[in-house]
Length: 299
Ligand code: ATP
Image 1 (tube, protein in one colour):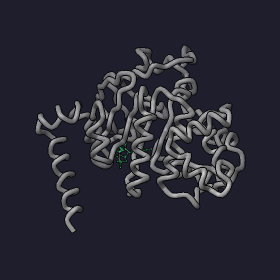
Image 2 (cartoon, rainbow, N blue to C red; image 1 turned 90 degrees about the vertical axis):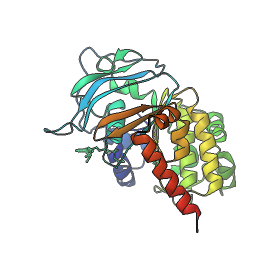
Image 3 (cartoon, protein in one colour; image 1 turned 45 degrees about the horizontal axis):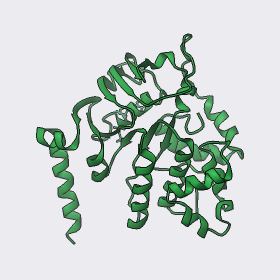
């Protein structure tokens, strides 16, 4: 549970505040780990391997008493598939991620990992097979090397550097005053938003997870860095099941499956081409996006 110990919305808000108070990364996560989570089921055992098949069977969930936040969710991701979650704000995309990462448990229905009910798997052992690349990549005060190594604490220097190469981060790191030993401040001042993303991709590559959670950046990043990020993500995603809260048309178009979420339900599900043919909600969403892109292109 090194990569994350907080539900999605909390994570970006709280991480930096907490980090500023503490030096060592492990200690921070000890603190974060104290957040309230139901105990593992008595029968739960640790898994050592995960291929990455994920299945929701009639999953419903509510944060509080009252209406369901998501209801009757059914979908299946095969190992290595990429799944884009799209839909309006408040639709339930982050909630689905919080269920996959088991920050919350379904009220009804079940989530299966490699055909095993999640309740029979300990949370920590499951999360050891997951990694996050978030909009606000969470960096801590320490060197670039330490920040990447956070993905896998026992990684050698060579492995850290290889991860940086695979993440297209190597050349910018080498240009820093002290290369991999350059100190970052806790908010990552001194490097760009895009470079932060590359570092968090390097960290995820090092973690070598079977399941990836990507929260795509909404902010604009310069074109060259953006290309580097896309390339590195493609490499990272290969062979891993990825769930992407997607904002870019490109990403959505390339996903193996698109789940269109509205008011806590999957209202459409399929590939880009299939969904366009249906001429339903996704079709309209897509047409609107295209109009926006065109409008922007005209000065
Ligand atoms: P966005 O695109 O804005 O991030 P989303 O599709 O990810 O939205 P969620 O964040 O999953 O949507 O929110 C779904 C609903 O659940 C919203 O009505 C939201 O206010 C509510 N919600 C989210 N987190 C919590 C929480 N921790 N406690 C109570 N309600 C919550």
